[in-house]
Image (cartoon, rainbow, N blue to C red; front, top):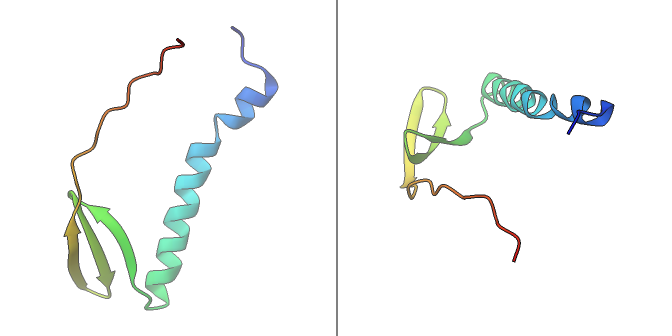
Length: 69
């Protein structure tokens, strides 16, 4: 299977999403707003220099490719 032009453009989407998330988080922190993220397996709220653990997250589950029936 060869890559089409659309596939090549779509390959950049995950990197754009990460850049957007990083920019939004930086703007929120600069404005003094809290952010909620998963860090080290815990859901945490970061407000200024204060990090508050909200709750531990369950371990990740690996999803295998679905097979046609």
